[in-house]
Amino acid sequence: MPDLRGRLKANAPMSEITWFRTGGPVELLFQPADADDLAAFLAAVPADVPVLVVGVGSNLLVRDGGVRGVVIRLSAKGFGRIDVLDGHRIRAGAAVPDKRLAAAARDAGIGGFHHYHGIPGSVGGALRMNAGANGVETQERVVEVHAVDRQGMRHVLTKDDMGYAYRHSSAPADLIFTEAIFQGYAEDKAVITKMMDEVQEHRETVQPIREKTGGSTFKNPPGSSAWKEVDKAGCRGLTIGGAQMSPMHCNFMINTGSASSHDLEMLGETVRTRVLDHSGIRLDWEIKRIGEYADGEEPVQPFLGRLL
Image (cartoon, rainbow, N blue to C red; front, side, top):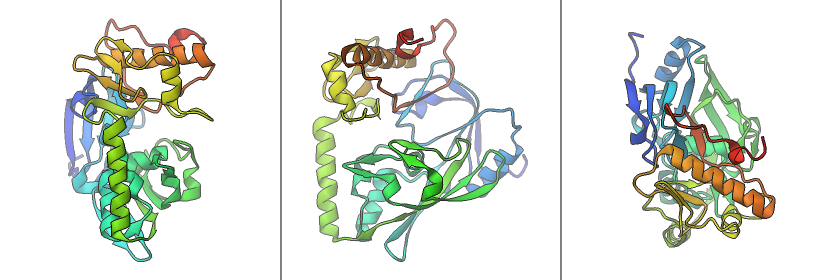
C-alpha cells in the first residue's frame, strides 16, 4: 500500500491504549490519516484478516494473549474535528471525546449535550453503543452517521438505519463510523454550564474516576440498576488478583495496579454468577471484551459455566 498516509505499527501493545492498562499486543495497529485513507486501507486488506476498531479504550478489555489481525484506532488529527452548523446542529468526528462534544455545544449555546460531559468515551463509541447518561441517550441527538464498511465503501445512515435500543445499535458490525451530525436546541450557556457542573460533581462524588477502570461494567437490567444488583449480591469491593469491584461504585471494575485482563474478566463473571444466584437476574456486559487468552490461561466461561 504505497499511498497509505496513516501510521502502521506491528505488535503494538494494547495495554497502552485501554484505560484498564492491561492486555496483550495486536498484530497490526493502524491509525488512518482521514476517511479516504481508512477506505483505501480497508479495500486493500484481505477479507480473511480480522479487523476491529477501537476508540479511546475506555470501555474495552483486551485479553492477555492479544488480538489477531488489525486494530484500527481513529486519531484526533484525522477524525477529531467539530463544526457548528445552522439550525443548532453539530458535526463531530468519531474520535472527538464525548466531553469535548459537550463543551463545544455549550460554547455554541446548543442544549441537549450536557450528559456527554460525564461519558468517558468518544463519539464513535457513543454511536455504536447508544451511549447515554442522566436520562439522555445518543439516539435522541443523532441526525445522520457517516461510515466506511469492511470493503472500503462509504455509507450515510439515518437515525432509523442505526437501529438503536438500550446501549445497542443494530447497524452492521463491520461499519466504522467516521463522523456524525447531531441535533440540539437553543439554550443559555449558563444553564448548560450549570448542568455540566452537576454531571461532573456527580461523577467525582460516586464514581472512581481516578482509577484504572473501564466505566460501567454491566448494563442496567430491566426495572433495576446493575450496581444495586451487584451490591445486593455482596460483591461491592470483591477482589480477584489485582481486579476489584470498586467500593465507591460497585458497577465499576478497577485495576488496583497488578491486575491481568484474566483477573478482570474472571471477576466480572464471578459477579454475574453471584447476582444470578442471588436474584435470578442475568447481567449483560457493557464492557467489550476482545482478543485471545494467553498461553496457559483457562478461558473464562460465561457465568463460570453455570448455564452451559
